[in-house]
Amino acid sequence: MRFADRTTAGIQLAGEVARLHLDDPVVLGLPRGGIPVAYQVARVLDAPLDVIAVRKLGVPSRPELGFGAIGEGGVRILNDDVVRAARLGPRERGAVELTERTALDGRLRAYRAERPPTALTGRTVVIVDDGIATGSTASAACEVARARGAARVVLAVPVAPPGAVAELSGEADEVVCLYSPDYFGSVGQWYTDFSQTSDAEVVELLNDRLAPSGGATRSAMAGTEAGGGRTDDVQPVGATVEREVEMTIDDRGLPGNLTLPDGAPGVVVFAHGSGSSRHSPRNRSVAERLNRAGLGTLLFDLLTPEEERDRANVFDIPLLARRLTLVTAWLGAEHALPVCYFGASTGAAAALLSAAEPHADIKAVVCRGGRPDLAGDALADVRAPTLLIVGGADTQVLDLNRRAAERMHCEHRLDVVPGATHLFEEPGALEAVADLARAWLTEHLSPSAQRARH
Image 1 (cartoon, rainbow, N blue to C red):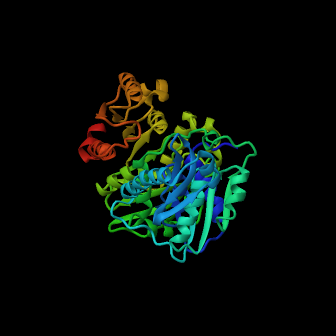
Image 2 (image 1 turned 90 degrees about the vertical axis):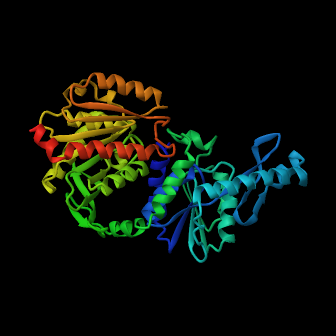
Image 3 (image 1 turned 45 degrees about the horizontal axis):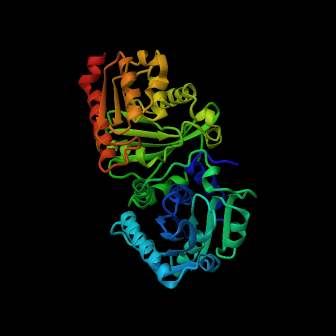
């Protein structure tokens, strides 16, 4: 059993944890790789998400070999066997711990800023990581949670060796592990994509679950009934109404989040990239800025969770484009508003391929860090004004976008965000994307632009 990425693993893990019907849960993720997994668990449980900081104590001559771990509140776990074998004295251990505790405190300040830790007293704490190797870090995390007053501790991971699961069953009240192979190796070998999670992504995910309106909105959404084309009102925020929708496409229910500010001149439909979903913090951040500018947005999943497990579907651009076209038709039947596309990564290719359809009436397209080259010959048939946004440090994708732009006959522009990498994680980079997108979309949704096109 292999997981496509941490998001996919988190979605599967969340389903198992939800079956426990936990009372008053709070989800704590181990940084950094555990946070994207924990985010999905917190989303499904409709629970707050926080970080639990634990640092491994490595033998000075072999840092990869841990002789223990430390956590918040002065918690320290030591592996006496390793300490004896490495002949570590109190002075050596103390030096390592001082270094790691300084790093731990710095990481907490970076992740929480001035925000206090989430209260755990009397609550059920779900500790989540992307996998367990030796178990020392997870053990320390369990002890930290108990020291902070947790009434019950649940440890949830996608993958771990049988020995670690057995040992940690004595540390946690319950251990949830999706897969426990006899031959384990390393956590990373059980993921197709095990790329490093950045500090910026950790902060973004934590802030998303702690947003003031987030909990209330998600609670209301959790009660929405699924049905073909049915929409149920969620709590309105000012003049903006948010709805959870489910569209029946190809006999499959595709969930989405529709936000319509009062008087919106159009709706921007988001097509996310591979390994992402409608819950993508980056797309949500851009969507929120567009909403504040008065534009409607629809973030939805192009594939069902089962379909996403087949990597061939994730990169099947014609399939994704067809789904996008059908969702656009559904949107037109529900709301008589002009439609624009915002595509990220492979979703950009799907957006362009859909916009190139002979009867497509897409007012504008924005591609963020996109792969327009995957739209192939259809690039010449795109009629919608198209903005390509690429990070200046994302050199390979930048070159692909430049070559794709040369093949386009519609109004188009290539904007480069200086110093930004593929995910626009640098300070201010994603805000720059949102501002460029807002300006392009509002310009081409203006009445004068509509008259000019007709």
